[in-house]
Length: 131
Image (cartoon, rainbow, N blue to C red):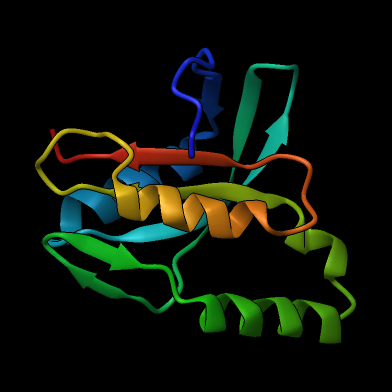
């Protein structure tokens, strides 16, 4: 369960990251999700880098299913190409709620819980909307 009492972090976006995420949300007629490279600047400050990835996924007006297999294949490719350290840079999971309010749904919390099962000490989740 996500602790709703934790203060929200301050997230700064490099221009390319903001453009990629906002454009994906604006152009996709249904929900869409992806991951991005992010750095932790301080306890509550983060910087999203221009490295945004969108994996194959099942999308609808009411949800997007993060494809763990597509993510695993990307991780495997990174490892094969001796780029394993790159995997841990992608700690931001973002997705859209099309035109509804940006909140963490039960499905979102389940996806976040899957991410938290990994070996990373922290992750960031972001919900966007066309509005």
